[in-house]
Image 1: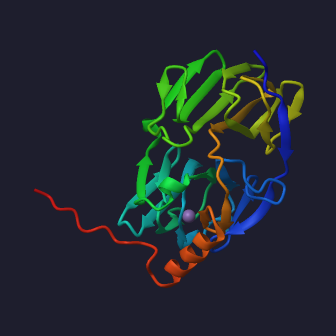
Image 2: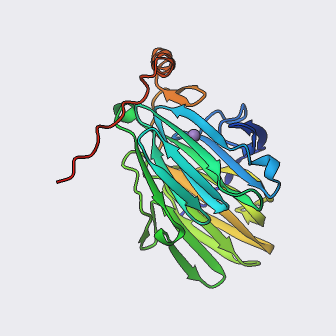
Image 3: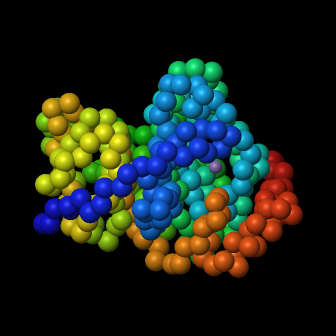
Amino acid sequence: MNIKPVDRIIKTIKVTEGAGVTVYRSIGTPALRNFDPFIMLDYFGSDVPDDYIAGFPDHPHRGFNTFTYMLDGNMLHQDSMGNRGNLTAGGAQWMKAGSGVIHSEMPKQAEGLMHGFQLWINLPAQAKMTEPSYQEFSADAFSIIETDGQRVKVLLGEYQNSRGPIIDPYTHVHYLDVHLDAGVHFEHNLSSELSSFIYLFEGSAQIADTHIDQHNFVTLGDGEHISLTASQEGARFILVAGRPIGEPIVQHGPFVMNTQAEIHRAIEDYQNGKLVQQKPAMVTA
Ligand code: MN
């Protein structure tokens, strides 16, 4: 079985998002515009309130999914579907923007560590204009598989005999948070057909014959098998893989569609207040 080599190491770019939040972007930068089916990956991690306190006030999305994983901190999510959610340490949210949603994500803390990832996962043309939805999970919704010196949290997709709470029907995204003690070896089978990447956020490691350091984002090349060994300081990383959609991608900020005409339509709909069709009130029997 072929071992996946490191294909590219992408330097993250510091970006100011929302009303002034510092994030470190890897997918969605000039070096890696997108990585089908992934559109963007932002890492945020700071205990300096100025880096996050301004939050992400109301802003729109159309045409894809967002998945936010909180490692530390506390954010309040509110959206135009009427959802109000509290995102806490170890928890996550999956939002299908579909035909359109306006939401805000604001810190519920004035100090302390805010730490996590936001990943944008594309939708195929057939699903871009479908109804938006929002799902939120606290830390206890996810399985953790512990073996000698390894701790694997299954956020999305499947790992060994565990399933995350969401199996995306279009891209089958796998998303694992892997924590390895010093010198521990990690192996995992992952089909060559999937786009796969690792973001290492603690320690350092060796993947096949490449050394990777803290805050390296790496895409993995052809092969069916991941083989990674933690250094003497240990390692913690997210391992994410998904099936490419294979359609044209036209992105304009928070809108990700297939054609320029659809982008114009998204901007127009947003400006005219038509981006979000409020759902009729639920009828309870
Ligand atoms: Mn957003």
